[in-house]
Image 1 (cartoon, rainbow, N blue to C red):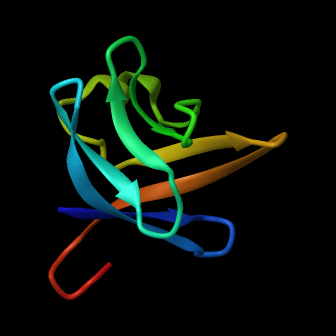
Image 2 (cartoon, helix red, strand yellow; image 1 turned 30 degrees about the vertical axis):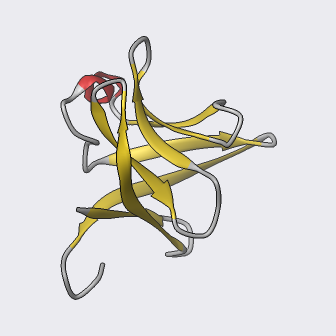
Amino acid sequence: MSLAFVRRLDGLTYHFRPDGTRNGSPCHRRVDLDLWLVRLPDRGWCTCDADGVANGWPLPSGAAHAALPPLTAWRSWKAGRSYLYDLRACGPSGC
């Protein structure tokens, strides 16, 4: 299942495709950048950059420990900025 993060501020959409597993859970990679949606054993679901630095988490934080990436609001933190996104599942015809 492909996923998309849709930024609430302006509707900007980032698409993620399935790309194997990590730590026994499915992971997804952003199609245009080396950014990952993964489940870390100690932090739960998050987005991580190419260096493995976590920079986004689902809200509420308890959703981070679900079996699959929670289709809910997510908060990102990068370079002193924070954005709110909605994680959505994409069907065969797109998101």
